[in-house]
Image (cartoon, rainbow, N blue to C red; front, side, top):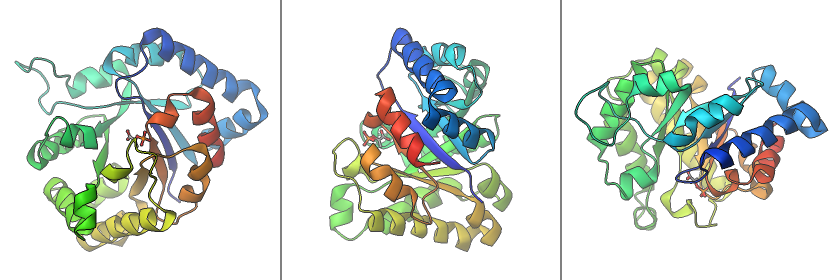
Length: 264
Ligand code: PEP
């Protein structure tokens, strides 16, 4: 059975004080509220994983405030080199030292606002898999690519350009893929359950064709794009959706808690 992941991507939100406050409230919910303690026991049994991706400068605040061991930290980006003259970048050993278990790679804002090309994302993915940080690799089509009937072609290109050199074991055990259609991110326009499931099934089929049944069956695939407490349960009930990557609705602790609640 694939462990579910509920991951909040805070983007460039939540300074250190706000991060501490959020994590303290979430920890208190896990420890004291009936729905929270249920979620905490499901997390302790290994069935769900709760992840927060704060801005780099708030990672330490999240690390210091998390007490129960339920919350894992993800970085929002990485550089593929471990050190050197790369002004403004943060390396994988630095992220590991800061307490990150995961790193988000290829988020649509990195691809489309900061113009990170497929080749750069392949380097990031490979470097991450060689480190002690695990990748959450994002893929997703633009609205015009979808309208032109090219959504699957785009997903295949983004994955094939990144995972060509990976092995079945790595894909099955270490990789998390997040399907985030760009037109659904921050727009309030969630993909329908059917569209989200079809895309995640397509990704799993690609993994099956390249890496075989065992890897494709254990690969975790998340959906992201305007997930809210009122649509998270139905998205999570789709057979190829193993979790959610949440932007806006992860910024309010109550809505993040409600989404976690729908995963247990
Ligand atoms: C995201 O940033 O990955 C995201 C899915 O954002 P939102 O939930 O706000 O659409």
